[in-house]
Image 1: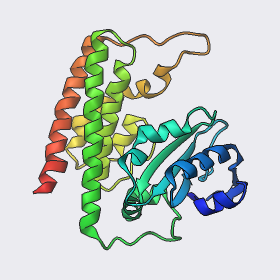
Image 2: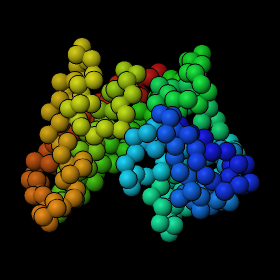
Image 3: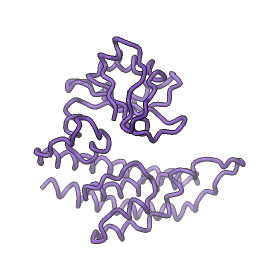
Image 4: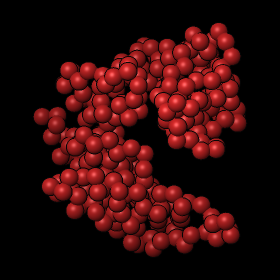
Length: 267
């Protein structure tokens, strides 16, 4: 992950920054956005992460930005929708994630952070504060399961009207559940959407591997299903009855996972 300090942004025009794989990232296209972030959020630091600094970007790839704000920042400054609004109307393909300094420092200690911020200090962050790490992990699992529940609710609403995107939310609910299982085993799931690939990473001794194995059939609905073909053909909408039945099964597993991996951890 490549860092652009706000003090540097204020003093000079953004030029080039080095990628972790030895190439370079041209930051000039996002200069207006960085200036807007600095003016509105007054971050301590702004980090570029994801495909661009890692050398995996393609033409048109988004710029993924992490704004590190002071701990006393308002909830409105930390709100993701408010952050999204800052990226609008500039014609820049970018995603902005705000966080507090404390959250940023805590995440350095997790396996997730080593994927997101592989070279933040030049070496892996200390893993000494086990209790705080456990709390952070539990909060992440709870958030993922909550969002999975929201996906299931979306399935129920959309499927009743025969909406094309009900299956997409079914896939999303399944993906978030599988990610919870991987994170529970200290396996960072990365950014892929292939459910069979994610499930394959679970230990064979994990009973949940069988419980979620059938969900791989929803993998196509994560990406290609959402777009028309070059010939203008729209993928056929899956059977609503089947999607609703699968969503209910996933909802039961989400509830079970919440009890096993979140609620039990609080005792």
